[in-house]
Amino acid sequence: MVVFLLALSAACCLGLGFVLQQHAAQRAPRADLLRWRLLLDLLRMPEWLLGTGFMVSGLILSALALNQGEVSLVEPLLATNLLFAMALSRVLTRQSLGRSGWAGVLLLALGVTAFIVAGRPTGGGEPAGELRHWVVVGTVVGLTVLLVSTARRMPLFEEATLLALAAGLLYGLQDALTRTTTLRLDHDGLDAVLRSWQPYAVVAAGVVGLLLVQSAFEAAPLRMSLPALTAAQPITGIACAVGFLGDRLRVTPGALAWQAAGLVAVVIGVIVIGRHPAMPGSGHRAVPRAAEAADRPDGGDGGDSPDSPDGPDSPTGAGPTDPTGSR
Image (cartoon, rainbow, N blue to C red; front, top):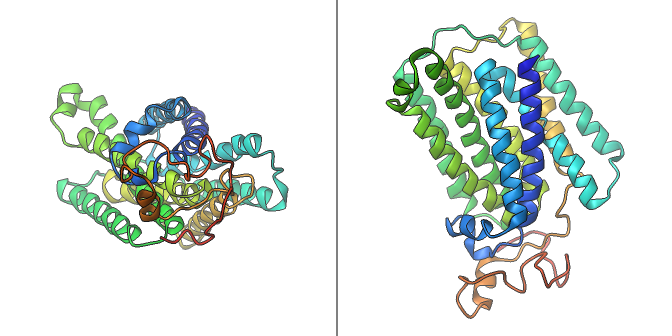
């Protein structure tokens, strides 16, 4: 029960934090996309700092949950962050949930329940050796690099989705390595943790993931990024946990079928909720990065552009729109 409460509390904080962060990130200069300067600009926005406070609280709570329970149990519960994001979004947009919203909520809840009940995640398996750790980590990092490289050649809306997928991969890996770190802390002490590479990989994955997800939030509305992030993180975390942490799931044909159906329901529910009109940013205008930079006399290094979406002097949706978000 403690694991459930910690994981759901973490999901609540993460969902609220993501909405507040995206609401602020969409006002950042477009030229900062995928640059470290983006984080420096966001640090000057109180709304983003509040969202980051919620996110950090969520990460701490999720670390506590991972210390108490298996990754394959905690990850599906963390996916419910989208429900809390929807709740705050409804307040911001004043949109009713409607049939599609309730359908997404039901699919997400049933999917999480089906996976946990059918899989009965347990620990106690023999952790993998260093070689398998590096193989799994290298695979996730390689897929992340591939997604980011592909995203740079896509229109902004599609770029946001791919960047969020890449961030979800890193966050899932981060969760699995967090579990490894807390287990080592419990058994071998702080000195052994500081001499291992996992805690530093946790920090690196978190920092790079933060840049990717904030760039995704800046590039397009939340509905284009948060579903991809929320779907990729638990799947990656579970794969890593089974791959090198020794987590065990039931592998009978019936159990595997229900686990697969549960994960599919989670992904579909996440997409349905993420695309709901209540998610903020439906009026977000995707301005080509090159065109916006060319309009600035300083070449795109300054503050908020007067043409940036939802800027302080520009009403949402004002001016011509590009529905494809192409560059």
